[in-house]
Structure formats: structure tokens, C-alpha cells
Image (cartoon, rainbow, N blue to C red; front, side, top):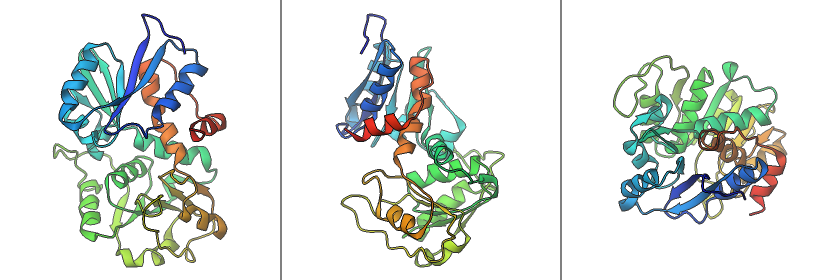
Length: 294
């Protein structure tokens, strides 16, 4: 680590924060690129969020990543917000510049870049996608798919009303940001299907995305039959604990190409790192191994 009186400072804020892999990830890039800077884990309670961020700005921080439970609070904190973050309704990256906080959401970027790096034949403009789940993660994934040009998205959630509300918000005909303003140039028709039809719905998928917590360590299993899924359909799970979830293991056994969720974490960090430290880092196999070793 190189640190001087001119060191650039950034970090990640959350509550708690000890589980975060971001300090290890950014620390690797700082070391590899020989940058005079540091990236710190910052445990900030919800009631102290605004005050703490004002303090970081006053202390000369370049910005921070934002993780649970602060992503919606970060949206309200910002002076300027990019359109994608408004559509998603959450901010995960803050850049402090000219006494202002500039907010973006790089989770969507990370999701798409992970797929692009790890799939060869997936043409988003010609792909039908099945998305499981209707929480905040699903919102980011669907917005990312729409921006990538996906023409058709099928959405299934255990509570159908949540899926219908998400589909209404992000509909190409009625896509709104968090201020209620209708956005322009949104593609990707969203069709809500019953959760009970999740296995049968897979026959139309070029891409299957699980955004639910089902299948994560300590969570209930995701009960899904992949018999109807075309063998060339890509299957991805946005979680990385475990790295190979039961869904990915089943898909691999089924002969489908799979993409684990770690790459999403790695790629979403790139835009923030570049904004704070001035260099665009790369996601490599060595980086994956280093982050997983923690």
C-alpha cells in the first residue's frame, strides 16, 4: 500500500460492514496499480447516515460505495442522480465533487458485464429472459436487461402483486423514476407469470436469472425443474455464497452454460474505482481467486 499526504480516500458504508468483500477487492486494485490511496470499510448506523457522509465529504473523501441498508437513503442524499439509478430506485456509488454528491447505480452495469465476460453467444437484442424474484435486485437486473436491448422479459415471484408492481413501474410504456417522471427510450416488455408456472415457463428462455435468496447459504432451496429449459440457455444466479448455488449446479448438470454471481460484484466496482482513483481496473481470474480467498 502506498500512502502519502496526498492519498485519495474512498470506502464502503453499510450496517454492518464486516462481511463486505469490497475492501479486499479495491485493495487488490490499489496494490496492483500502485495508486496512492486507500479504500476503507465504514460501519455507519442508519440514523447517522447523512451526518457521517457529510463528514466524509468534509474530510476529502473521493466517494463511497453504499451497501445495505443504505441504498435508498443514498438516493435521497444525492445532489445529482443518474437516470438509471432513479429508475432502479437505489444508489450504490457516490462520487463527491465540487461539494456535491453524485449518485449512480453500478449493479446493473456489473450484472451485464459479468454476462458479457462469461458468455460468448448471448445476443441481448434477440434474447428472451426469465427473471425469478421481484425485490430490489430484480429491479436492477430488469433495468439492466432493458438497457441492453432485451425485447422480452418474463417475471415470476412468490408474491405476484410485487411482480406486477415492479412490471408496472418498469414497463416500457410507463417506466417511471422515483420522482414519478416517465422516462424515455425504454425497451423490454415485461410479462408477469404465476410462480407455480416457473418450471413450464423456461421453454421460452435464452437467459434464466435468479434474483431471489432461495438457494443461498442458510436459505430455503429453489425448487425448479429445468427439463423445459433449452440446452443453450444461459443460467445465472446473482448471489455468490455459495459460489455454485444448487441452481447453477443443476443447470451445469443439465448441460446449460452458467455464470456465477461473483463477477457481478467485481464488475460493479469498476466505475467507482475509476471515478475515485483515476484508473479503470480489470476483472481477471487472479482477482477472482484473490477475493474468494478471503
